[in-house]
Amino acid sequence: LAAQRGIELSAVGAGSGPAGRILSTDLPAAAPAAPQAAAVRPAEIRTGPVGQPTRRKLAGMRKAIAKNLTASKQNIPHFYLRGTIDAGSLFDTYRRAKAQFQCSVNDFLLAAVARVMGEFPAFRTRMEGEELVEYPTSNVGIAVGLDKGLVVPVLLGADRLALPQLAAATRQIVEAARGGKIEAMGQGNLTITNLGMFGTEEFSAIINPPEAAILAVGAIREAVLVQDGAMRPGRVMTVTLSCDHRVIDGMQAAQFMARLKEVLESPQMLV
Image (cartoon, rainbow, N blue to C red):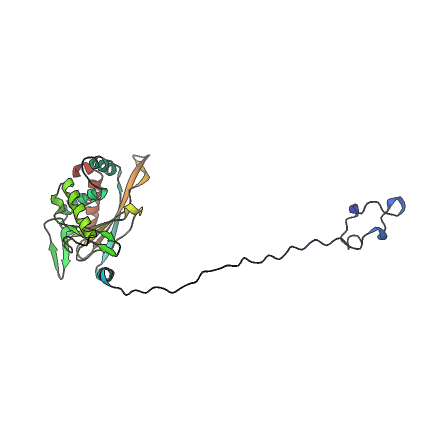
């Protein structure tokens, strides 16, 4: 009976029967019911007004960029090579050079690319209509981001400039581009685009026609390097080369990247 009512006999104490025996009359009617938990109401989720999207007609610089790069991806058979540069010497050499004249890491990259382009005619060649046109100098485009889009001023004959002159000329054409004046627009052989200043480690870029290649440069970052079986701290940088397969073959691109790596890892030859 105690079990049916949910009563523990030890809680009743001594009964009224002989020798303290517990009788049925000693048992309460039922054990007190456990209190029920209050129902929990789900939290009310409030959302703000959705509003309406803003529509803008594709126009101006944005329209030109869309047209140019869509045509590039549709008509140019891209292929890509990616390489990692040991950037320790590059970074140290840049810091020493900066104490002597105004320069940036990008200036070292541009100087290295221009030098290697001089050794590989395919990278000074453009697809113009049905013709392959090889240029005698390294004309390097520099991608410059603006509020309204992207422009590519070109440094003509970059391979013929010493690093201090190259740095000054690059600074001049980039500042002019930001002011609305694009130097030698459309006359490049290869463009350099660098997103490393935003922390981007690596990316692939779309070729800027009629050029045959574009080099995408990532951030210089700290890494653990392995040399002769031993680990050491260092700095690395990843670069990705996009090529037009109508103009440049895979072996040429691989040789270009190997030589570029060699120059960037021995940057003293650029100063």
